[in-house]
Length: 112
Image 1: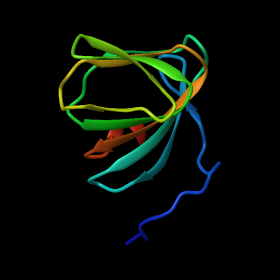
Image 2 (image 1 turned 180 degrees about the horizontal axis):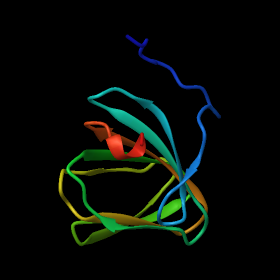
Image 3 (image 1 turned 180 degrees about the vertical axis):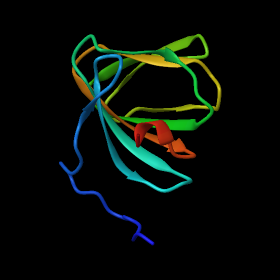
Image 4 (image 1 turned 120 degrees about the vertical axis):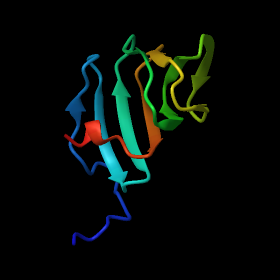
């Protein structure tokens, strides 16, 4: 049995390209919960999509136009949002920035 990781330090973990041209790195995960950092260049888009996972996101840096279920708001560093299971959502980076997302349960597709 492998030891669970309880801590992640700044800069740990490799960035990987996302299908929409941004980047992500998985920070920590269990079967029940996953934390992922996403990096966006100015103008970067997280295309509208949905998934069965509940998502909570924190704007760590930058400004983002966030759309959830047809409603759009602009959030800046320190802002946050929640996406209930199955709702269509996406983001556009109004300036370079980072989002820290948590998913429950974990996103197995991010570990492949």
